[in-house]
Structures are given as structure tokens and as C-alpha cells.
Image: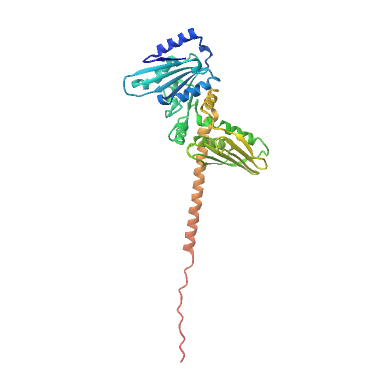
Length: 348
């Protein structure tokens, strides 16, 4: 069921929700949280579909704040979706126009479920500091997606600089299956130390950067981040180097991965790129801070960057040393003897 409320207010929306519960028997008490989705009017349907699918695991009230044009008269159009159009949740879509586009938090507060946690999600471009955003300040968890930014790697760097407990990013959630496969491979004998690792992925893959940071943090070894595949293709491979050989996990077709270990058969694994629904459902399973993500963001990524810088300095220093040595050799070489012309012997 879909009910449209043009040019409405938060009070009217609440009254309509109460009427729906009384007539249709919608059970609000079964909602475990309020999910606030902040997006543009043109890009709201895909996040709503993902939230509806995830709601079968996490029944919730979904409030979509869809910003429209800033020109014209300030107004709010609302749409209420319940039943089959809302999965196991109830969806309230708020379309804000004019000066109302800057009042998202004001219209959301009256619609929050009492005594229920709040999760804020920016499926598109997120604010520079989600925790300081008016809607982000209302939430216990704040979900962003660096892949939606024009510069994903710069976006994940920005997340590190402004991190607050409760922040997380879908770029990290996409790595869950990769991390599980690698952890399982390391559990198999021989149980040797990993000496170095190489992570390959697209040039714009924030997930590949986070994977490198996680390996550097957990394995305590040098990790190299390389570029492989076209932009937007995400993770490509991870290679772990040990004394007995390497562990190679490679996904060339975005669907099936090949796991290769020294003295073992090659294995094919299903390793699809995770859907938005799966990533969102995973993030809604926990409402406390993700400490592992925090450590990877604040410690793992700087470790990889420092290692790359150190490697670059070492290579540059070696080249300069060789040049200086060559120059010194030239200066210290003995001067060449002057050639003495042959004198013809005169006989009398």
C-alpha cells in the first residue's frame, strides 16, 4: 500500500501512521531500529529496494530524506509505504524542496521510533564529517560508501581523518567474504609466517586499499598495493608470500575466484561482488562500533602508505648512491699519460 501526502508536515505523517496501525494492524512494536537514508530524489529507489530486502532480517522503520531542487517554495511531499511495498518494514519517503532541503534533521526527529536505535546511511555522496552532520548526530551508526564518490580513495582518506566510533563504510563490508577465505587458507598447514603480501585491484578501489591495510595490521608484514583491472572492477587478487610458497586468491571474472596454495590443488570458489542488500543487512546486524574497521582505517592504511614511501625512498637512495660512486671513480682515476711523439734517429 502506498499513500501520498503532498505538501504535508511531520505531524500529519504521524497521524496517518497511527491510523494505518489502527485499521490495518501494522505492528510498530516489532521494529528494532530506525534507518534514515539520505539521498537525492533521483537516486532513492535503489536504496529503498535494498532496505526493503534487508528488513526481512531487521524489521525497521525506514525514513528516506530525498533532497529535491533548492529553488521555489519550501515544502515537503511525503509518501508512506507499508505491506508488500515495504518488505518487513514501513517506509516513509520525504521529498524536500526549497529551503526545506536544509532541514532534514528537523523533519526526521518527530518520525523516529521511541527508544529504538538510529542508523544513518548515505548511499551516495556523504558529508565530509558524517558524525557532525545534523542527521548523523542523531545516529548510533553512520554508514557511507566511498565507491559512490568521484574520488573513492580520497574519500576513504577523509573518513580516516574524521573517524568517530560508529562510522563504517560499505567499501569495508564488501571485503567480508575475501577476508573469510584468506583466514581459512591461513588456518591450513603449514602454519608459517607471512613474509609479504600483494593486493591488486582497480585504481579507484577503496576496498583494495582497506584490504591492504587489514593485512598489514593483522600480519605485521610489508604489503604492496598494485593496480589491476579497469576502473570500477574492484578487488582482483591477494597474494601472501611464505617461506614454503605463496597463497594466491584471484578473481578474474567478478564471479568466481581461484585459490592456489603451494603443494595443493587449485580450488574454485564462488566470490561474487556483494549486493547492496547483503552489505546493508550485515551492517545492521551490529549497532556498536566496528573496532576492526577503525583500526584498519586509522592504523592499517597509514602503515601501508609508510611502507610504500619507505620503499620509494630506498629505491631512490640506491640510484643516487650508484651515481655518486661512479662520479667519484671518475674523479679519482689517474690522469692519462701524454703521448710522446716518435723521434726519427739521424745517422751520420
